[in-house]
Length: 155
Image (cartoon, rainbow, N blue to C red; front, side, top):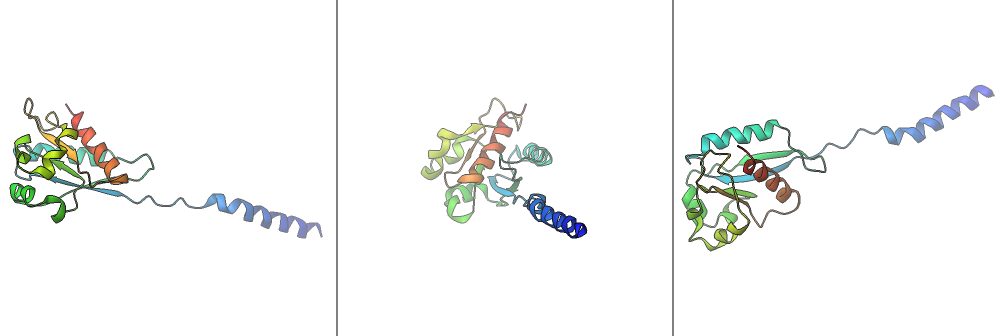
């Protein structure tokens, strides 16, 4: 009888301990869609910083990985003028200069929140503005801000 008691004690202990031994849920990556001019004078330098950022394994406070995806639109100026938000899912925009959006009310309104990433692209003293789109919310906005903050702090 004592063997049965120890057998059931072990089974009960396993049942009580097992829920704590679950494999943690995989964190789904947050993809930040970045719009920029692929032919800008800063494109090569920016490519390096994007790779550096990705290789640092960036994560949100929740542990979700941050993944950057550049929108591959060849006609930068035309894409900006033809209502960027309706044609692409964009979380962050990196401009060549402030003059790129002067006559585009929907985008020029974002310049108040723009950060200058000139140090990251070695364009200083030029102003190279970058901002998070107002349509980016939640984790996408947080991840986009983290990336732009990284660029703004580069030297």
